[in-house]
Length: 425
Image (tube, rainbow, N blue to C red; front, side):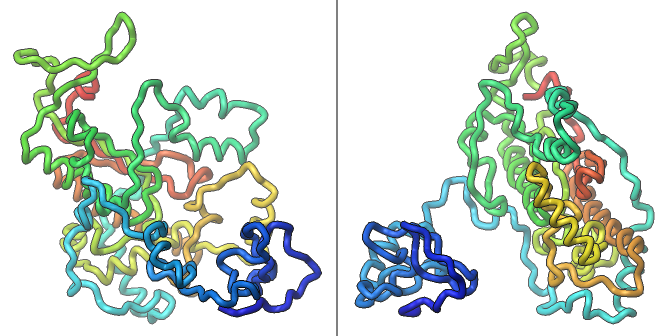
């Protein structure tokens, strides 16, 4: 690390109590708090004359920060990047799917580098594979009564109303409900190892709001393979069911007694339902994708999947606004402080040119948009086929208006032999 900071190109002075190191890249002083009597923070302590005798080195656990060399041993014991004990429900790559490296070419060129002929062939394959698919989904736009007062408040403008619609999850929780947050990658999550689920043996409903790309496939495999399959192998039945007392209106748990057929469903499913808001198909991954068999049946493979998931971004981000429009939109958003737009929307889409590839010039805006939607539909159809093979009745539908979110497709699934709502927990 440099012994001294470059001379500031500004008349500003460091804030009192903050680091005096000038960060050339950011054109400002460091804003870290300093210890009493010090001019520099720990990260830039090497710039202080009194600290020159002590050497700072990169942390071996995370090179994004530094540490005093003579305190390395102490730091490694408390560094936030150190490996922490894994919980029982962590099983490495349990939901990752089989890895077949021979299917995936080592290097695939960006879409912008493809020849016009190559791209046209890919589009023809896409159109042929999509024949017979219903591209007009059913509208299932619903609203909960708990939101009516807020949504109909005349004080709320368009931006506030859109924000409310996007942020409704988790706002209205039932009293006495138990919530537990698990900080773990879905790729390694084993649901039947979670104490609450293994103890109560209650049916699970999987709900996901914008599980970006590959996360949707990991979640589906986590539910219908890892959890459902393991419960069926052990032939487990629910220990208790939740029934409603008509007199009190309260929910109570009663243990299913022998001979009481009304308390236990004839066919109990470990996964009672799945509801996932789909998005970011450009973030899908062939290794983890659950619809491989569907693609192979259509004569498609890893290469086609790679380019289809790239082109899927054309549905929402392929219609790039001009720099003038983009600048105007950016300024407008800064003014609208109450509009916390979804990052999955058109203007807020965070897809880089490297990931999506520049769209070819011989396609019109509408053609690119249509191709993008076909790519999304084909990838989602693979998920539908997967769920059907696993004993579910899946469906795709629109759950909100595209003005609220361009990523407005919902994947739902119920077990084929699901019991009525009155007999499930």
